[in-house]
Amino acid sequence: MKEHVLVIMPHPDDETFAVGGTIALYAQRGVPVTYVCGTKGEMGRNMGRPPFATRESLPQLREQELREACRILGITDLRFLGLRDKTVEFVDQDELAARLRDIILEIRPSLIITYHPDYSVHPDHMALGRATVRAVAQLPPEERPPVHTRAFGKASAVLGEPDLVVDTAPVWETKLAAIRAHRSQSQLMLSRAEGDPEQAERMRRDRQLERFWIWRFDD
Image (tube, rainbow, N blue to C red):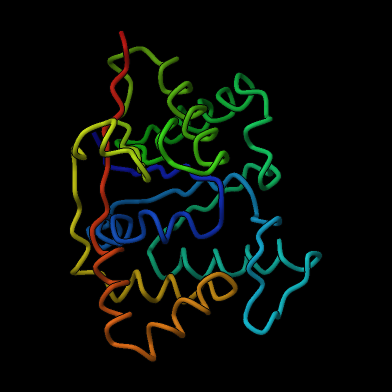
């Protein structure tokens, strides 16, 4: 099967902060990566320090930042679902799964990366993760690509150790550049790290390893 990675997450910046190193490693090998982004992060609270965005300008700014991050990471296909930030959990799950299934059938990815439906903290993360596994479950078992999920919080205590840990050290600088591209969201964090080597090392340690739990279907 020809490799093609499909990343499905709800916000501009999820692709970078959660899985940017993994994406960069695939892109470095020439594997196409599609990012399906649920929203434009229009309800985000970070607007720069000092603020350089408004509630009205934020969606356009977040899209610009995301497009730059995609360029840096090597994502060549960016699509938006047009959902509203912080409301994904209220979207009809059958309709959302049907939209995602159509994209999956079009792309025929060799791997899907999304959030864990139960242990990824943010309601938007879990809702889009649920819709994604529901979409894949509707395919015949032999046609389902593997689904790798990102989980946080108490995930390890409940799910056990991750099935896969990707060390993104070879592309850390690329991931860092993509984090920098999400300026409205990363400015404060980066300014602290750039002025404090200990803080910078802590950020690298926290974000260099990307942990995944493989989703297992019941049938």
